[in-house]
Length: 309
Image 1 (cartoon, rainbow, N blue to C red):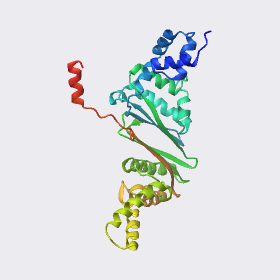
Image 2: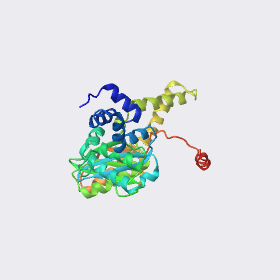
Image 3: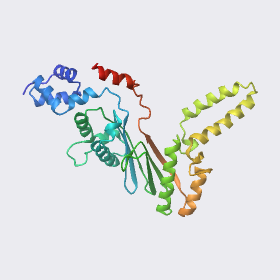
Image 4: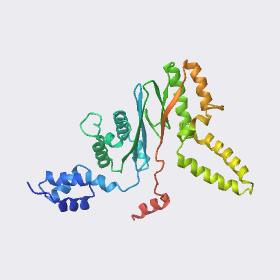
């Protein structure tokens, strides 16, 4: 058995672009033969996957899975929407969503979870899919919510297939009331969250840095009025209340009944359910949010292709 040195692993990595551990495994499997190791990586799709990894993957799907008292979201990205419509890709995202229930929001644990039939892990399956389809793909994030004394409601917007779409929401509600009534209200809240993208459940849960940043901006705006300091303070507090109505879930006008806030709608739903309802958490995943997409000139690309450039 040949000795596998760090220099050999480095050389193979630079040649193929594959991961360090994959390169080490390739050299071990091929007794240090560099050329055979390259072929081994190519055969497994690992070299190809690594070469694709620099490309921006901002398309794909949000996946959602739920059990009686748990729900999980995942975002699996691809380079093109065409791949997102591929049934094989969709089946993969569905399977990853189901594995996400066990991972409970831990992205590393999800990557290590057994995929579907248990023959490989989620991370290995994703890498294999990159090699077979030929696009960069990434498991970007996951989230999980559970409710021991209530329900978890879900909603998928722009649904491409059951449990798959462009915006996914899960929301946990605690209540000892009628589970069906609580779940029905929870579904409405999930749809509301998809539409309004709140930043927190209540004012106390807002990120203090976000509030301070907003206060600073509002103060500078108010100072331009030239009014006394005491008046400026009142102006800022009034504008902050308006800000809270925009970003705090319970203070937002309920999309299903804009004359009432979500908090008021929750009080009404509690009467129907026969017990108080409390929203304890939510997650909203919108496909590709926060990813910087490459800007491309489609007409120029077509012209280049036509000229053979």
